[in-house]
Length: 216
Image (cartoon, rainbow, N blue to C red; front, side, top):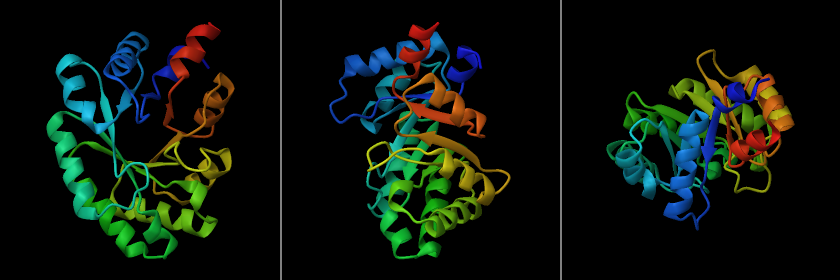
């Protein structure tokens, strides 16, 4: 798989709590140079990035990283992110609702955030490290019914990141209009290629540019 093809499907990501403007600016410059799918950045930087990098696809996170803020808080976060210029939204599912098997509430929240997104892309982070197989399947069904665009494996801040097994499970249980994003712990060319080959449309990674650029 060519580096250009891989990078075109990477959400070039920087979500550390200590991310400085200089580090975000560097991320954006790299994304433009290497034609990544997007930059994925904290909500507080969205407006500034949108103003300074008009040609970038800007992704941000909602309810991040724990997911247990209220639906009202998530929808308002989403509306503000869209007003600031975000093109794509990665929201964390309410893991507590999933663990309590309150799947109707999970679906309703995803639907509310999707409505707040409007025509913008919504990716739903399942945070699989905390879920049983039954719960992962239930999230797949909720994401599909609620009309989200993607299901995403992980925040990268949980106890584990993406796994090939979870991607395969997602593929079996999501609807035909739902895509898959893998994220969390994907740090090598081999891993990037493996997740894309398994059917992921996107991969979230902080070091893809560095790995692929240095590997050429």
